[in-house]
Image (tube, rainbow over all chains, first blue to last red; front, top):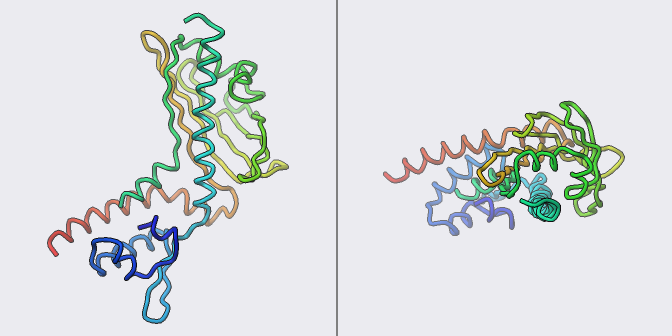
Length: 88
Length: 158
């Protein structure tokens, strides 16, 4: 559900369309997510719109990808260094 | 709600690597500044709790990172574990990202198993909002999982 919201603000109805869930069930999930602080809900006309609170999600993802690759390559470098410098 | 699990796990980076070398050797390469510089980054590390040091590397504009990691040794148990804070930012000593790196070494018959844990990734800006959001995440995720488990069990009767 959070992945869907990361694309766009969606109404509860459109969210329900994407999941094999009743509208009340989606509402329950959405309320839980709102209470937890992940999404904000706005009523516009007759529809409720849910928006993901991005708040640095994207920057966090960028850092995590960077460091994941960073450590993988550094550990590999350490292995090469150890193998070249010392007999096992 | 598999997406939530992804988000929880996404805040921690874990690597495990086996080196066919004795634990004393691996430990040396993790705690000797000159040796560390050969595979990790240039640094002025000292294996002393509380010691503040830096790693220097190339900057990354897309990450608002000037290339300096500001670190402080948090914990050391020789040949076993080592952890230091790992903070960085856009320049002039400003910190916008905080994290902690922990190394754990396990001697094996034919070498050493190394465990790396890199976690935290807290942003120092907007402290109130962000610390509230970030620090509370894990607890919130756990609460959500509990709530959803209850909800799911409830729904099966609907």
